[in-house]
Amino acid sequence: MNSKDIPPCKICGQRFDNIFDATDHLIDDANGEHFDPKLILPGGYQLLIGSLLRCIYEASSSPKSVRDITQSVYATLYAAESTPREMKEHIEDTIVSQEMRHIDKELAHFLADTDEKDGE
Image (cartoon, rainbow, N blue to C red; front, side, top):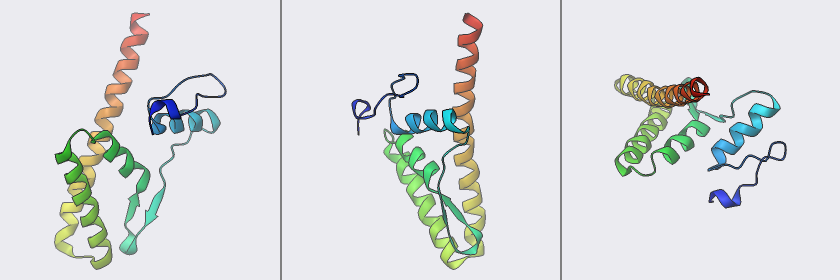
């Protein structure tokens, strides 16, 4: 799907580069919540499918990052099915690392918005 396939916002006419941005915009307008569907796994684990897809999409230009992400997800699925203690620390480290990348991106976006507002 390319950006030409994504319809503009019916309210404001904004166009979007990807479906993630379009969905965020539409949901923010509707109720302010973040769309992140979950897959509930055994052992109390959850796989955040929305975040996973965003991560893969954002890492698509880096095969190494995509390989790392897919291995982490695979390890999470394995751990959920077998609950091995030795995998727990690795999975927690991976989850924290992925969340930090997400936070770094949001911080950069926030700072860019702040810089634009300061320049007005």
